[in-house]
Image 1 (cartoon, rainbow, N blue to C red):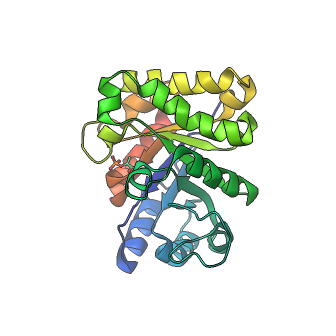
Image 2: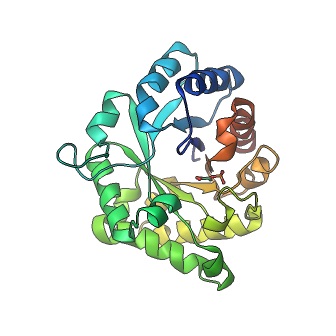
Amino acid sequence: MRRPVVMGNWKLNGSKAMVKDLISGLDAEIKGVQGVDVAVAPPAVYLDLAERTIAEGQEKIILGAQDTDLTNSGAFTGDNSPEMYKEFGVTHVIIGHSERRDYHSESDQYVAKKFAFLKENGLVPVLCIGETEAQNEAGETEAVCARQINAVIDLLGVEAFNGAIIAYEPIWAIGTGKAATADDAQRIHASIRGLIAAKDAAVAEQVIIQYGGSVKPENAATYFAQPDIDGALVGGASLDAKSFAAIVKAAAEAKA
Ligand code: PEP
């Protein structure tokens, strides 16, 4: 039985006040909720405050980051590294988000190198994959996801997905309110798991595959009722403690 992971991707949102309010509010809202891992990924400049705020609370909130460089130190202006993240208690790192693939021209192979570097440094990669609206309409969703996953398998072998997380995020559903139906998401999740199972059934059985794209308290339970949806990567709704906690609770109930 896979333990679901619900992760909040704060993107470029935050302030000192928001970090404190949101994390302490979330801590209170999820008090006693069992059976689900809860993670937040604030902007890197707030990791220190986020770590301290989590420590003041009662719940074990996992701290995540939103991207990584391919080196631990050096002349790479503006970047952050696994060694730095680890100093702040970060264990999970989002890579390959469509906003990075798009605005920073990150290729599948480049993202695969980030995956490798996170594994090398003992961090959990949260690998975002997903298709554009045009690719979806052309019936290319499975092929796009397979290409993005295969970039990692080609570089590292399928075993690299042991202990890793995949977030299937149809790009047309991110921040649009136009979420995929739970049935469509399940079909794609099953195809992703099937692709991995064809190479190694045990790896496929344990890999966490989150759905992301306009997940809200109102629709969260429909996703978590699906056998191959193991949690969610949440953008907008993770910026409100009550909304995010409602999604966490939906995962806990559905997967109990
Ligand atoms: C995301 O950016 O990872 C995301 C899923 O955003 P939203 O929930 O706002 O669609």
